[in-house]
Structure formats: C-alpha cells, structure tokens
Length: 159
Image (cartoon, rainbow, N blue to C red; front, side, top):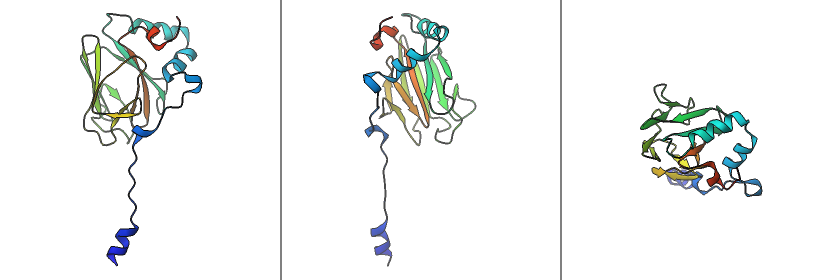
C-alpha cells in the first residue's frame, strides 16, 4: 500500500530562472520606470548614477513597498527580513539574512546569503553577480531595479 501511495506523490520544483520578463515594445523595466517618474526623482537617480559617485540605488518597482528607494553608499549593504538589515523587506518570502550588496570601487556585487528562496537577477538565480545599470533583482516578492555603475544613457534612452 505504501508503494502505491509513493507512486502517486507529486513533487514540483519551481525554477523562477526559467520565466521570461515580458517587456512591452522591448522596453526594459528600468526604462519603463524612468519614463513614468517625476523629474525630481529622476534628478536624484541621475546624481546617484554620475560617474565617480561611488553610489547606487535600488528602487522597488513591483511587489510590497513599491516605490521605495534605497541608497547604496556603504561598502556593504545587508538585505533581509531582520529589522537589523540595512534594506529591510518585511515578508516571509525573504530570509532574515537574505543577501548583501558589496561595493568595490565602482562595482556593486550582490551575494546571496544561502537564502531559502534564492536571489534572482534578471530572472536568473544567482549566488554572486556584479550588478549593471537596469538589472532587476528579485528577493522574495520584492522586485527592485538597480541604478548605478554608469550613466542612465547606458539603458539606451536619449537624455
């Protein structure tokens, strides 16, 4: 009887890295965001992205806390569900110590802290990845855009 029950068990693995990002008209999520924000917010992002600033910014564009912005100007920024995290995401889909972003000169690298649900960059599961202008990070239900490392012109839009 136990063998029959084992045959009927269904195990499903969900791999978010296989889903594509639907971008209407070929416009990236970062470009869509930049097109709809107020000029004052755009000016802040331009300033953060200026060459040599040593800064970057995460902007939540989907999910809980949509519209929240986090300045990345420290050598290391922790992300997690713990209130002690530098970037606090209050949701059970986020591990207490989910990931961190390390800055070395002008480069920002996201490093997953062996989180339960993983860290995704542009829908691909990563353990460590150098971030580039316009990358979309997914941590739990939170979808954030990364602005930094270069001028916004690198997103292919005219300024």
